[in-house]
Image 1 (cartoon, one colour):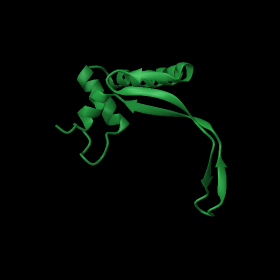
Image 2: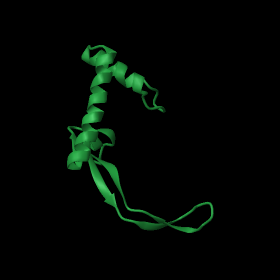
Image 3: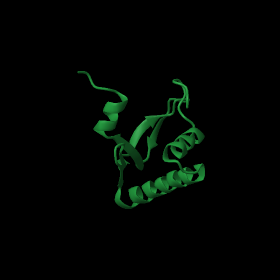
Image 4: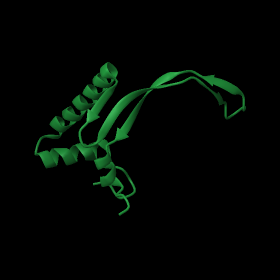
Length: 101
């Protein structure tokens, strides 16, 4: 597994799931590829995709706004755009960062 300072790589994640689920790495890889495709299609179609136990992906509209070019300090207009945001479930958040008791 990855050390405490480095996140797991894709290869390490796939190897972990393959070992735990007792399936070939190729099947674990296919599962994650299909999950990513499904999430993208559903978020595009309905504007949201929920991953049980982890969180929810949502499409959010950002308004146009004024910004600054950091190199020149010149004001520039940043156009409106659609972005993907992920809101973590409360249960997942509590597992990662336990609340104060």
